[in-house]
Image: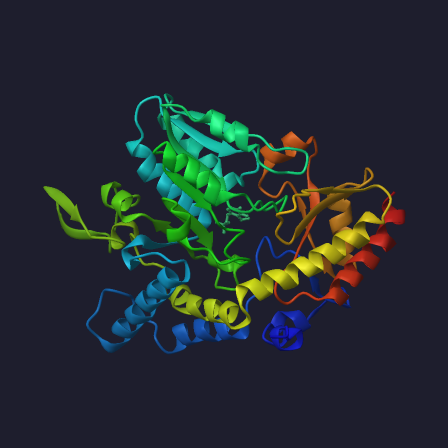
Length: 406
Ligand code: PMP
């Protein structure tokens, strides 16, 4: 199948706008991707046609809203290869999903337990474990380092395991380096030591087919807004055997079976972990984003993005003083870089003046920045709708601003 970039782009209303009088070149897809019209339409329809609270009413609208939400849950289950919709919990995003696991599953950790993280984690996969540790000072966090290409040191990973290890939690794809970690191998090793694993898939699901059953991970998390879906929702996949044992994360409506002042019993899965009114409109629209990805084929999206990244990197390497962070042969479409001693912030500001939207700063990965000995980078990241022409615009913008900032 040929990659019909014009058709793809025509689905994204925002791509026809301009910035500072220049055509928009949106290269901040790692932070959030743009949203196709069909997802926006589904959100509008959720508000205009079906809005009523879910799981609450016998009336038509509530039933329809509930149906859309539960249909979305089944769609997500199938999309990531989970065996039951009871294992799919809707959250506010990857961040909340990790907080849920750290708080609830973490409360079951044995005394003196050790948690293995990696130096390339997003703050969302560091701080929740530190918060747990602040309540449980007996717990220890251990960190896997990287090599010069930005790949995890797998020998060190294996060496960090001991009889106290109670959790390993790492990203599938780094949001800064783009490194695609060998998660199946890493999960396999943890499994051989009977250690549960959480995989932060926020940067993986938009770019590759993920099958949680094949991976055999215990938890997998991701956010809708990075994969062409609505903002404010995310998914926690968890193995049923764990979810059944885990205490609720938040209390309120929806997550109970019966409440009295003498004692409360909780709802079954997945509702035990979904206190309060969820973003049922966004959840109902999420399948449209999955349709969008399925129609093109996530493998085709990834191949297109990699072509853009390789083209961009080739052109960037011709620029004197260019340093690219993250050079693994297993890389997703993210390029983090610095040029000479130009500050990332200044470069981002001037690129914006030329219509090119990139991310600058520490990318919520300060420990990684510390490891690399820098305060931040400029990061360009690609999605299904980006073009080679946009890469050319980005490179020529870079070439224009570098002499001004040097
Ligand atoms: N993990 C990774 C690897 C990420 O890139 C991000 C978002 N930048 C998150 C977690 C957090 O995602 P969210 O803000 O959507 O909860």
